[in-house]
Amino acid sequence: MSNSDQTQSSLKQLHQALGIPSDYAANCALPLCLEPSALVDTELDFYQRRQKLTPTAFSAWSRMREAATSQGISLFLISAFRGYQYQHDLIARKLEKGQPIESILRVNAAPGYSEHHSGRAVDIGTMDCDALSESFGKTNAYQWLVDNSDGYGFSLSYPRDNPFGIDFEPWHWCYKEE
Image 1 (cartoon, rainbow, N blue to C red):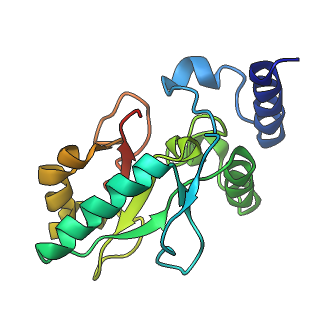
Image 2 (cartoon, rainbow, N blue to C red):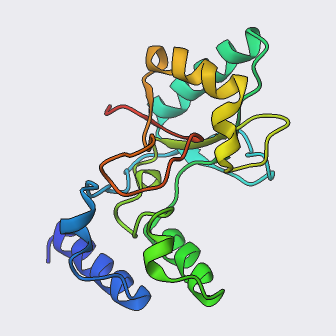
C-alpha cells in the first residue's frame, strides 16, 4: 500500500469514527492537506504550548511578527501545526459535549482538510482580544495583517462568505505554498 493509499485509508477511518459524511471531501471544496516531512519548533504559543511550522513558514511568521511589533502591533501564536489525529481528537471532544457534526465542520475542517496539517497555518492573537474570537476582525492587529501579510507570504484563509463553508476566521492565516 502506498503512502497516499495509507493516508486515505487512515483519514477514512478517522472520518467514520467521527460520523463525518462520506461525501465531505466532494462537498467542502477544501483541498487535502498532507502533513509535511519537516517541521521546526516555534516559540511557545499564548498558552505556553510547543508549536511547530515548516521551516520557511516559521521564518516568514517570525519576520512578520517582528515587523508588526516594530510598528506597535502585538501578534502572537495561538495554534500552528496539527496532525490528523489531533484534529480528530479536537472534533471528538466537541461531539462529546453534544455539538452536532454539521456545526463543528463550520469551524473545524475534517481530519486531512485543515490547513494546520500543512505546517503553514497559524492562528493569531493579539492583546485585549479573546483568542479565536470574531472580534479579532475589529482589531488593529487584524487590519495590520490585511494591509501587510501578503508581503510575508501569508493570506487570510476564511474570509466572510468563503467558498469552503467555514465560518469567518479573522485569526487564521496561511503561508503560501513553498
